Length: 206
Ligand SMILES: Nc1ncnc2c1ncn2[C@@H]1O[C@H](COP(=O)(O)OP(=O)(O)O)[C@@H](O)[C@H]1O
Ligand SMILES: Nc1ccn([C@@H]2O[C@H](COP(=O)(O)O)[C@@H](O)[C@H]2O)c(=O)n1
Image 1 (cartoon, rainbow, N blue to C red):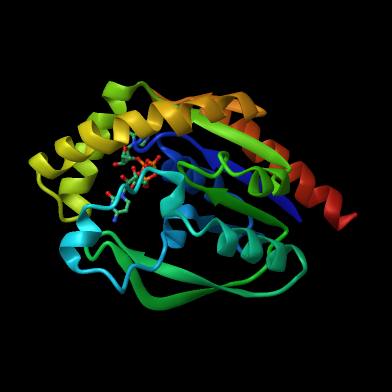
Image 2: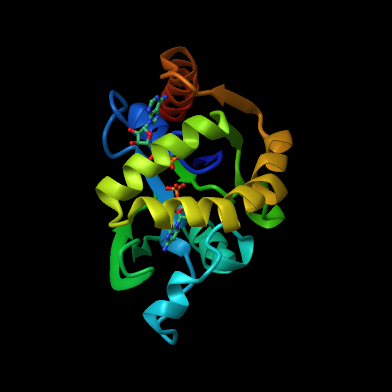
């Protein structure tokens, strides 16, 4: 199994890059795990308390479960990936059965901050977009898809997202094997990653 970690600040385009990689690759050979699925279960908190969580700090993530799931996949076992709701700020209680694949992609803002998890990645990728680009994309996406309004997005950006990005996320760029500049759609870089994956798939078939 080839395990690829894709990190980068919110709105840099991680999910988009993953989807570009998945297009054109043989379906069934590549699986995806999102760090967002591993936000800690907060069922014991009220909605107001959940809204106030700092979701950009590493302590908000259940890294132990994420690491355990990745090891299980590597050992050929199917895992139950939790489903997360950005509307409820909590896990939904549903799970997605995720089967081991020849290539597993793990994507998330904080995945390179955790040493044990980082060690599981064969290839580490950091997607970079400037902070103004990321804020514009985040505003549009969170209002259109995550049930937020402009005040919520901007307050979160100023209070937690920006300082956490500077403290925890941006420094993990130094661990990356590949940095993808993504202020504009970068098909060349995505094609290079696809080539690496394809070579691995062909090699495994020999
Ligand atoms: N290179 C790009 N140029 C313009 N918009 C982009 C680009 N990459 C992603 N987007 C858009 O920005 C938003 C956030 O992208 P997404 O892939 O969800 O980022 P992430 O997963 O890193 O938070 C989405 O609406 C997506 O369509
Ligand atoms: N309930 C939540 C949980 C997380 N967030 C934000 O999501 C961002 C990470 O996801 P990306 O898809 O953008 O990488 C992170 O910056 C959190 O602030 C949230 O808004 N609500």
